[in-house]
Image (cartoon, rainbow, N blue to C red; front, side, top):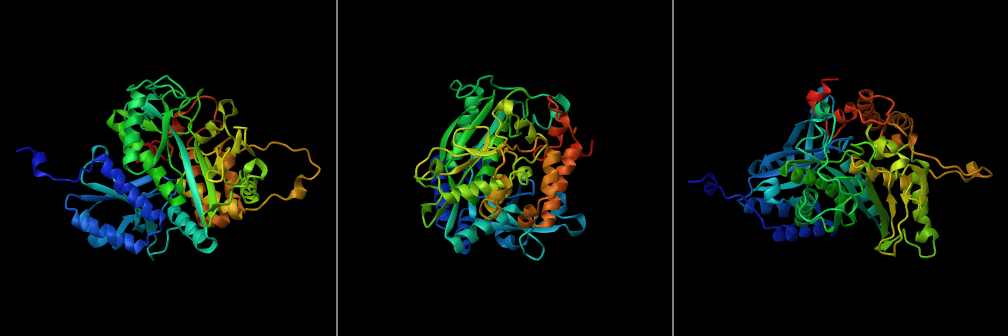
Length: 480
């Protein structure tokens, strides 16, 4: 008798998967109380005998995605006692105070395509708690969730976000982790913007990934090859901030998993190959109050409201302080090169794509601002949290400071060392992060920077790939 005949694990057709996942997303948008969501999910897991394990996921301080599988029966019995060793996670607790706890967010629950993630599994997000049960200081998912809840409750304001995440597809599995041996990446396609033949390797990857994301309820919009060789982008729908941040993590996970199945590597390094365009993560934001888009004003400058312009001005004023958040790696600063359409000018524009903030043409429904200076290796929870706190609470520039002076263009930092220095010294970052978290994040970024040449130069160095927070492993770090 074959082994498969002995097993009966959950495998759901794609159309049914999409239906389940969209229903779960709708429940989040309708703000189903967490206790109600928990009761529903527990009942489902209890009744569905074909599920063997639940993947519980969380993100560390740098935004790296972590997953662990719990036996379904154990999870249902011990969901309040999911402890783990925080000292093994970069940027989390010290060895002397290592115990941390996962608090399952039952509202953030996804059914997975069995042919990509394996049969009999579902995935759920979790927040990280300290030993006393309070939100862990380095968990920005908790910070973003709490801030969005506060805005909704106290100001009747809802935050909507969409991200356009670019990536590269390279030959061979684990191409990033093998870079320290090979020193190069091999393209699987030499085409460019919108150029791909049906069923060529890049198009097959895009198609498979799009199918999986559609089944996971992403709300696909469009997908295509990007400007650089072997570069791709798959767009999904605008949604509330926390849902989008969770989806951004699943987007990268799904791309990597599909690529691995095809014997390839999906990479979200900002600039893995010199002399071509890098990867960006344009981040679109708008706010609604009582169902009305408060960023829209048909009579306002560039069609947006004074509130939107205040939001923009605060971000521009603190752009250098928060540059390390939006560009968190040594490699990020290669992308901020004006020769390759880099959005490194600290300004907002409806037409200039070199500006860090673009104001797209839009109507009342779609009015928003687009942050173009973000790299795809940014922690999505930290990024959105920082943009919101800065745009709503950050200092506005003093009009008297520029009165009578010739206007000049300011630029984002050109290397991570300058970004770390400004980040460390920012009082506003200390206020919204907390001084301990600010110091911990800067320390992590400094550790990576110190392993790389201070001068970027033109050629990409092995160290900036080896010690990148999304690529590194323990063995590589010990080789420094």
